[in-house]
Image (cartoon, rainbow, N blue to C red; front, side):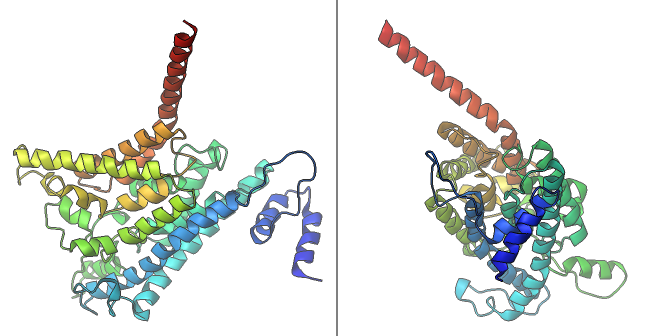
Length: 409
């Protein structure tokens, strides 16, 4: 008897029981449902929620793989095992090595496993309690979470944050499609406010740097390791310390999947081509960020802000450089475009995206303690997205009423 037949028999065995949602979640992940439509008119299409989620995951895989190489590379550079890249970019032999990949793989894969195991376990638990099918929404969230956290974050912290994000950020609102906040960003926000020392500073971005710092504090004679990000340096008024091409390609410290603007750009184009990601939100977010960057550059040029100001470093950053540093690109492509928490109307998407970009750079500049503003900007606009759509719809209704009155006059 085939495996599929055995699974079908098990499905009949669990049918109507409390464990049916848990079994069906595994069964439909491997196989298409057996039910087909027979009567009446139905819309038939090749896409469904599971395929949509898998497409988004496919777009993130290059960022994940690059993040593994970059994690090992940042470790080896920081510990003096290899020299930093010298303009070789993607063709550098010192970057694409098994040693770099191995270090990153064994640090990142546990993050992925913890994210999925904890998140899906809670999803299945709520499905059993509420007696409904397990939803596929966490498939993307489970991959997003490891990509937006520092490489050295303890696994137990990640597990606690995932549990909080899934329960408070999603399930209490009714599950997939009902949440008002992006679950992945809710998890990251929880980590930042609950464990701020593990989400900022110059140690958490390089594998082994935190442990090295602890050994130094214990009295061992070791060299201090710094893995300060570009944003961290600029927020303290220092020079970025990296070439523009390194920022664009991703050879810089940062969260696991956020460093390579090139790969994120290609992922965004792929999602637009697949009609999953909203190009309106992506483009308007970029425009909003550029406008805010230009405003800050104009303020610096006017002389209102001097070099002694704590805001000078990021204000003086060339406006378009903001697109290459921090998590702005990743947040814009993968989280601002979340169809559940974003604006639904076309005009609303332009407003929603513009404000995300505008506020991201504003928060980045005025919050030097945590200069990454895209997380807070997206979460804030998640809350206001329904309001934006409401006024857009009301505006359309008023315009139609005016046209109707003009025709009947």
